[in-house]
Length: 307
Image (cartoon, rainbow, N blue to C red):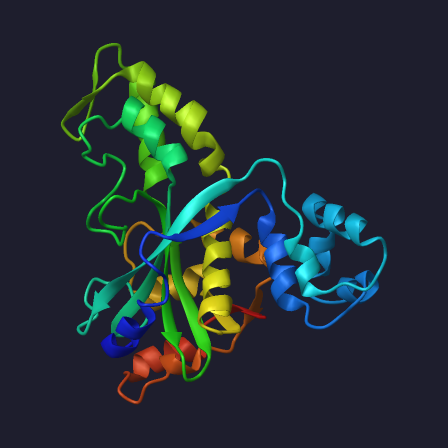
């Protein structure tokens, strides 16, 4: 993306005020809400790429409320369990003109959507783990939210508003991985646990992970991809959404050494009804790109959903 286009999009969400609620499998309701236009029947939905979502318990509960009548997209907004998580969405920027070390598929900038914890998490977190406010499970070199918010996960996107296309470059999480590592250290050590130079009580670290973080660990990837799709479709009006495959993403983003978790590029997009395609986002084909990059794009495999 160009910097001017990025700056325009950054104004979409009011700072620290956009809530995003999530519960297990809410993604199925969100996709059906976006996919159904007008009225349709359960039988007709079964024949679409979204038909397998009808087997989710949250969708079955929604269909039971409809009592066999014709379905609309709004019907899939009606179901809410008694327990759900509240997150806050913020926007950020990532990249540079040079493109060096940014792991972007083309030179320029990415839009970052950050999924941040609410006070329900932050209050016990500060009490048990972070009395000195040194943000132990975050990396400042990654595109996390600044200020009072603590970022659970983020997605990076390359967007072309004119073409109505978006490419999800990555979905990533530092917080859960680092917290689980700290827990393993806390269990092994008898004395105080020093993490990033600060002293932690071992039993407090274990209590935080087991009683506070576990529920977020179980849903963070679903919640992050759901929030990304919701933002692209509802806030930006983008209906054609691409997602890297594991191999193509590593090649185009010039990732060497340790590759990102494969499941985030395979299992997760399949769950969300993305389908593999040899078609590439149009904005990746730039006249200035080298012959080797163009050859990579000709051989690339992406995943795509149209809503």
